[in-house]
Amino acid sequence: LTTTLMFGLTSNDNFAMMWETAQSYEKKSQPESALAIVNKICKKAEKEKNEGQYIKALIYRQRLNLEKYGDDKTDAYITELENAISTGKFTECGTALLHLLAADAYSNYLMQHSYAIKQRTDISGYIPDDMKEWSENIFKQKIDEHQRQALNISETARRTLISEYADALETGNDSRTLRPTVFDFVAHHIIGTCQNDNHLYAKTLSATNEFMQQEFDND
Image 1: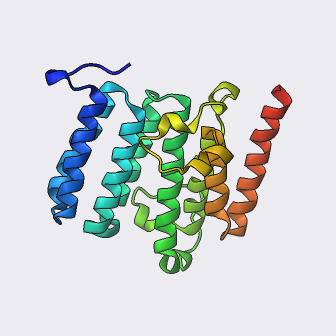
Image 2 (image 1 turned 45 degrees about the vertical axis):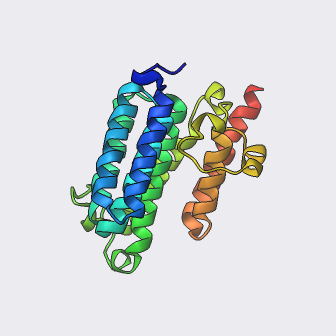
Image 3 (image 1 turned 180 degrees about the vertical axis):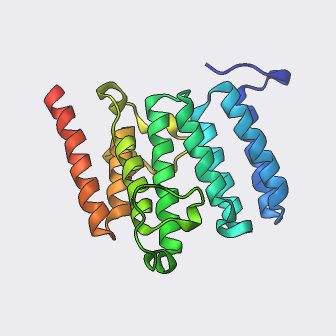
């Protein structure tokens, strides 16, 4: 149930107005003003425990930052995702989607800087504090860890409909029919993003089959 705010507006109405303002600033090429509004949305969503709006704000803010600053803000974005996950304040499905965003962020960074990263000797035994010093094996380890955690949700959570996160995710009607649950969405997304990497694809396919087999065994 939504909470009624001043002037008869519901919380969802208020979010809609804030998004309209942020998008208006973006169309006027005023990214800083748009970011300021999105930051307010993020804080409001966190306070109200509205996971869909919170995740949407994280995604939107990262896109604005990428357009304005390039990769300079990516490490801060990943840190925010990692911190959000570690708080334990999110539902299983919300946490799974945060893991998915973290895996995507590491994967995108690796893809954008693949030439330089592939020249580095693999690092083992420790992980440098600065992501810019990581070798390829560390990125792949992080991607694999977050993807596996995104898939590793309970039987009950696997049946949560993706429509509950409609605020955050752009899914067409066909997609919701073919992949109606959060687990379906996560598994399909992960397999799709890993197809160009044989190593990650094999590991992801194995993990997906493993978790899906658990579900069948429990039925």
